[in-house]
Each structure stands twice: as C-alpha cells, then as structure tokens.
Length: 277
Image (cartoon, rainbow, N blue to C red):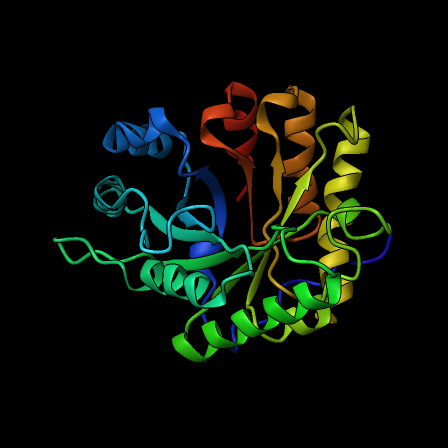
C-alpha cells in the first residue's frame, strides 16, 4: 500500500486553528444564532475543537460587513472561554471585489468588547455568478492576492474549495478551478467533500472523501498540504457513512475533519468525530 505523505512540517503560518474536529454555523442558522453560549457548550461537550462561523456573504447589502455581529461576539467569547477556536468564513460573489474584500477584512479584524478575535479566516469559494470561468478565476485570484497582502505572510488563510466532482466535468460547478495558483496563496484547504446525492454506503463515501483530499494535494502541487475535508450534508449520512468520512480523514492524514452543518448534525456525526485525534 502506498504511504500517504504527512502534512508538511510547520515552516509557514500555523494552521492549528483548523486541526481536529470542527463544526459549522452559517448566517442562516437561526436556532444556533439565537443561543450561542448553549451551542458552544454542546459542541465542547462533544469534543469539537473548532467552530467555523460564517460572518457574511455576497448576497447582503454592500454596507453590511458582518451580518450578525452581536451573535458572533457571543460565539467568540463563549468559545474562547472553553478553549475552543473559532474560524471566520465568508462567501464572496467575485462580482464586486471591493465589497468582497471589505467583508473579508471585517471578519479578519473583528474583535469583541472583551478583546477576543477570530483564530483564522477561510474564503468560501463556490459562487458561480461570474462568467465565463476565465473571468471568475481572474477575480478569485485578485481577491486572494489582496487578502494575502492584507494579512501578510505570517497569518494562515484557509480556502474552502469545491468538491472533486464539481471541478472535473465541463458542465459542473467550476471546471478549470485554479488549484495551482490557489495553492500558492492559501495555507490550508477545506474541500466541500459532500458525498450526499453522489455516493451511498460506507465504502463509496470513504473513497470519495479520500479522493477529495488527494485531489487537492495533487492539483495544488503540494503533496503535504494541510487539508480538512468537510463531509455532508450531515443529515444525508447514516452512522456508517459518517464513520467512513472520519476514517478517511485519518487515513489521508488530514489535519481536521467536520460535517456541514451543526443544525443538520446528529448522533452519527458527533460520535464519528470523537474518533478523530
């Protein structure tokens, strides 16, 4: 059996915030946004290491940099009080790069009254509003370069990237995805390895998760790249499939693993995540 290369030694920015089990809350997670402290307590009890919290998306008004600032503040304070890390994420449309940059920077610079800040930032790369693909790629790279310049070389940036099947066909979400260029601008990669509607059964789901990790490393040209696969949609997975996602993350020496999202997750996902080191 071929040996899977381990993630590269920490010679660049720390990706500690992306390590271990994770959980996702988006700006539409009304139940979770209404009770941040209780949600954090529940995640901590389940052994979750990092909360991934969406701060905004491109569909909001240009002036709305953070959609739920008070709830985000409560999440940050509660999570840090329990030793949990919080990574902010933002979905850009890539049509208004100034607005995308402003919202991303607002998340990166967000600070609570208690002085707590996000432990990392990840760009959610999946919007298809810009056409053709070449123009979309150019916009993505421009925004990414601007973000890298803004945070400097010492801070890790995460890239939430499309799944394997969404980038390998002519009529899919993002054919010609610029993995190699993205690989030079981001430090950790979170493929949306959603097997839901694509694979059924523990074997195929596990294989699909492994394929997503391998594709990111192969296409970026970084054999030891830190990868954190996101399995999901969580409510479409049974116990054996959820277990297979986590087992695949371990087998590929991923730095972390999670399911999308908290509201969809059940005992299957929480039990599976406990097996991740």
